[in-house]
Amino acid sequence: MKIKPADNILSIKPYPPGKPVEEVEREYGIAGSIKLASNENPLGPSPKAVAAIEKALSNLHRYPDASGYYLTSKLASRLGVRPDQVVLGNGSDDVIGMLARVYLQPGDTAVMTSPSFLMYEIFVRTVGASPVMVPLNGLTVDLAAMAEAVMETTKMIFITNPNNPTGGHITAAQFEAFMARIPSHVVVVLDEAYIEFASDLDCLDGLKVLSDDRPIAVLRTFSKAYGLAGIRIGYGMMPSEMAAMLHRVRQPFNTNSLAQAAAAAALDDEEFLRETRELIRSELKFLQDELTKMGIRWFPTQANFFLIDVKQSARDVFESLLRQGVIVRSMVSYGYPEYIRVTVGTHAENARFLEALERVLKNREKANA
Ligand SMILES: *Cc1c(COP(=O)(O)O)cnc(C)c1O
Image (cartoon, rainbow, N blue to C red; front, side, top):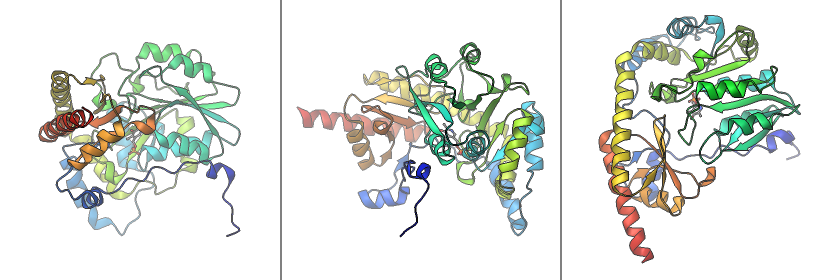
């Protein structure tokens, strides 16, 4: 064919396609596998959200409410912001895309950590801008180096807190010291996809730095703590002046009617959120205590996942775990050839993961002896 995509589109590495669990099971001849790979909620979706979806089904012939009126109002009153500071998205991914379309143009740069959430780079390149990657300092987001990396062309900075895939966090004091070095025309995107899991009182809370006078956009999602990853709903909070610009490029029906109903109901499901947080905290302790007993090194986290140092090829350990029906994430492509990332599951899932890991590491020890 004679057609040719734009150069910036050719510069995008496609998002690594995962296979459905059912396909993986067929391929490996296994059944009843458990997925601890995508930081999803092990308790399933919020039951109140499911009930709200069932109720909303009979209205599927209608277009969704383009303004997301009820969900936006509810979010605003829950979080203590104004409705004109909120932008709903088809997942918080969608809000990242809107920020890039509004504030970046060809030739601009956006500073982000390496590794970081793949969607930042994809959306930045989509609008013809370029990412500037700042390596982590060990497993810590290096805010000083990120401030240092800001150039004339820099229009946006992405910070993930708690960070994915490392699970670490930044404090309010660290953030303010960083902001003091950032020129006032740069948009700072604070991605808080895992903030509901954070337990350290020191952890920066984006709501506390949100202001109509600073170009800070705080992103949150219903995909993780509320168990609604499949229906796609997230939101951004930012100065109303910025939100108004995002609404210009937002597709009017970007959030569907079931997602709006589900998210509004999930916000009322305080019991589910509490149960989720308690499960993650107690199971993290269980996993980490057991790993310590096994002599395996792990890294502290403020999220619902954490890194484990398997001290050998993470790809091989990932493969062997998969054969046992336990799906985790190898960190090879993130630059950690001997680390795996594990999402906290139910107690039974976590126990099964530990057993499988112990078996895998023992077998590999024997094979190498
Ligand atoms: C999971 C995740 C999100 C959330 O994405 P959604 O589009 O809301 O599902 C955003 N940022 C990071 C870093 C994540 O890990």
